Amino acid sequence: MLEANDPKLTSWLPIPQDSDFPIQNLPFGIFKTRYLSPVAGVALGNTVIDLVYLHEHGFLDGLNLPAGVFNQPQLNNFFGLGRPAIRAVRNRISQLMRSGNDEMDAASREIALVPMAETRMMLPVSVPDYTDFYSSIEHATNVGTMFRDPQNALLPNWKHLPVGYHGRASSIVVSGTALHRPKGQIKPPDNPVPVYCPTQKLDFELEVAFVSCKNSELGKPVALRDAEECIAGLVLFNDWSARDIQQWEYVPLGPFLGKNFGSTMSPWVITLDALEPFRVAGPEQVPHVLPYLAFEGARNFDIRLEVLLETPGGANNEISRSNFKYLYWNMAQQLAHHTVNGCNIRVGDVFASGTISGPSPGSYGSLLELTWNGQRPLHLSNGELRTFLQDGDTIKFKGWAEAAGVRIGFGPCEGKVLPAL
Ligand code: MN
Image 1 (cartoon, rainbow, N blue to C red):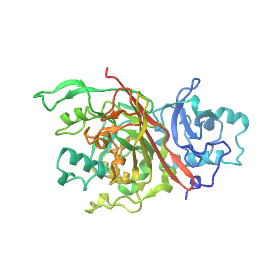
Image 2 (image 1 turned 135 degrees about the horizontal axis):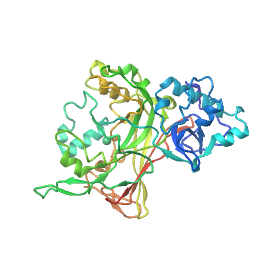
Image 3 (image 1 turned 90 degrees about the horizontal axis):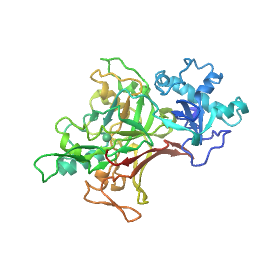
Image 4 (image 1 turned 60 degrees about the vertical axis):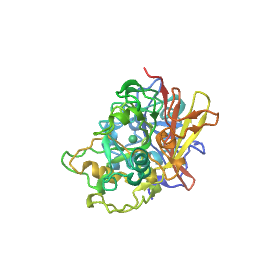
């Protein structure tokens, strides 16, 4: 066990019992305040620890960090140092903040510790490229059943490779950013030609994404055994989708404008190290995969996920409960497959899982599935019905792993739907 993950560790800083950010978590993000331009920080309880202050005042001495590595509006340069450096900084913060440690005097604590309520979180990385996979067998089966043939819901390639597509990095936004309802070409079933109008089928997709901490060489695949060394950590990810635009445009090249109008990312990057205690085996893969996708050990992570829908009419309902562990294809396989042709990855690249649906209807990760393409509306607590999202609706994701009284949470991932422009 990594020392920083020890469930017995406590901090001298008071941390609320139900916090997403106990001393065993220590995720990295970019924050700003009224007085401070965006810089790197670590979350602990209701506090953001200013890494620039710690670095400039000698608290991170001995870690061989480049000058100014935290004094930047994104974590790319820090993550680019690789997992050993990320681990060393997390270990050092764990030590500094641990009960009994008095290295930081009152003045240092006053300056380095910023109340979270006084901060605004930014996108943690500048994202060079974004890829979205399709790795939940339950989700792929539901979609195949709905739009194709229930007897052959999965296409022939699905169990042989992690299906994915290249998404759009420019429209990834941080949690809390509202999005306008997109407009586009829609082909009404009873119309011979398409119309241009706001989407009538705005949806969310419950996903978890990993952030790369590696620049790989063009032409050189990342072997599966090296893949996790390329992962700085995980975030929650909402791949907002306009189902009617998607349905008309996707043949034959796949998702395009039905997806690229916006994706919401949670601001704190939860390190793979912090999630290490939550490794679990994934679903059995039959038929056997090709050797480059073969793996050993537990490669999935037990991360509980929840979706809440808040409406202007006053409903605030949990509408889905899923788990990252359900994914058929794991992150190491996704990365090995992504690069097997020599495609290179860059620091800050985002690789999203695809919609994470579980086996039961209450665990489906999209409204498309929860309402079965609008056929079975959701009944909300205040009497409202929903098939797809309406203007003013807010979608909130929660994610956390929990064991031995330690909760490794992700913080908020939410976005509100504004009317079409
Ligand atoms: Mn997706």
